[in-house]
Length: 317
Image (cartoon, rainbow, N blue to C red; front, side, top):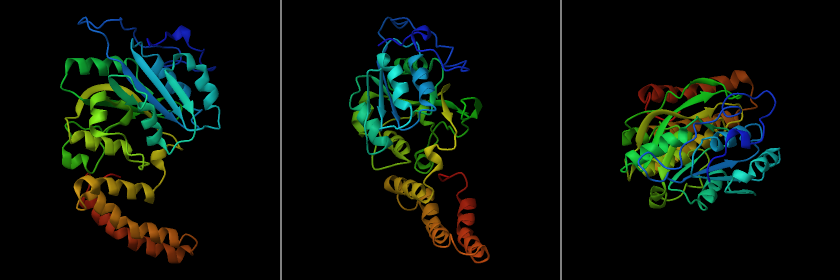
């Protein structure tokens, strides 16, 4: 499908202006400058009760001006206004469904099961693409046939979508020892070839917080991760974003991932194994008087302070 023009989409909500409300990407010709057809791009958007943000996400994909788009939305059974919004954009979706799933990774896998594209990516329903992001990514793949996966830069935005600052943690090049302990890649600014997906396998649906990092580690075992110095996406910071949840469970999962591929001696695993007693004390003493609880929390934090200084910049925070 060729991406629709701005005038073809439903009008934006009142007061919404700029990208992707009243602005669109450059319209690409049907044929690339070298005379070949544009590679088909499959984008999957998983979502659950993100009615506040999903319309901006949908428009940022559809207004790419790209000639060969395959766009799939997998909703996990939202109970807010998400379904109403998705239906507004149904004419330009290859496929969409709203039904319960086993979590975000499972939803993304379900979407990619219907993939017909040469290039693949997922965009969460609270993030957005920058204008001309697809053209930039695909052009790099065409010019660099050895590239199987690429990542670019992204902006942190606030809840209203206004830019705050670049995502400073993006790194190039990425050493394996670093990738085993830190995720230096902004997920919405990542694209890969279909062949890599089938070579390394689907996302691990048993993971809740770190399945993208797990995917990059497996990809790095087979190929180079190519970096392009272009801003491809916006990564939204808001109060209910999943990265802010989980605490002890999230850290346990991150430790499991780093141990899975690098062994128990990896800094991220050591740090979060050392954090387990603190989380236990925090839980058991939650209703204790503060005068008793506070000294215990200070003592339990001491090993983490030492390890934090020792592993500074070398573990996932």
